[in-house]
Figure 1 (cartoon, one colour):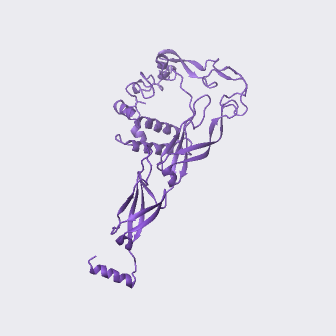
Figure 2 (figure 1 turned 60 degrees about the horizontal axis):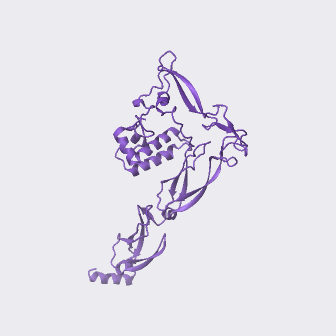
Figure 3 (figure 1 turned 45 degrees about the horizontal axis):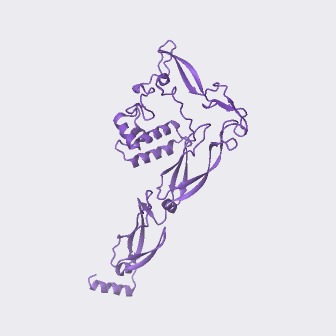
Length: 363
């Protein structure tokens, strides 16, 4: 961990803003997610790890000062980090006599309570991602969408227990009910005992006497599931919504998360500029000279707009509180209307006489 450059992993400069870090992570998450055809699980996890540190001000300050190892041995734990060993990796060395130095994280974990030999880590399912398209109006005001996704979910028959209904739990024969497998390993420092979670009972020490017929005792099964997605008002195209525990389930553990990328369909009239909406409005020459009252259709319904006398082409009119709602309150942006004065290509004799009159008056 000590050698990782989180800024390089995300492809941003050290002084990058939170928004730049967020966009860089979303881009990499979309590119490398394991569910993609050419996804890369390792790079996805690296990008996620870098984002979790750099988007948090306190963790980022620690990282900038101490590096990935942190002031106390890493962001993932407290105190001494046995698996880091100051950035040196000893796992690949041998002394030439058949004694494998092994993973020193396991060895020191036995003494200090860290690494794989220490406290049992919680079993967690995979994160998954998907995309949905929403209309421009729905992105402004928010909406609720329901989609069907195929994923590994908790078995609906046994509710994740892996056992037949009414069956009792018995001691796991693989680990003798301890939930962990103890292994003796040799190294240059002598023999050390390491432990790992039993892959049969997943650390519980018990298994069902009769397995569930639906999931064959796995407790989870790949199936189609309906997911409700609450799209917040003011969301922008490309943003991600995180649904915790809605990812893939895992036996006797916590499900992963579901990441939903939002794609906003462009509107034929309105455009977004941060918290404001913008649009173009064409007025006749006579309306520009004499002023006019125009009714325009907004996302909220019809609005009357007053065009002042003598308005110039390119002038922007503001309609307050008709823009994008803030995600952190009830305040809304404004609707900005850019006026374009339409110049007629041909003039009638009557119109020409009127223009000549204006010309004589110096207008």
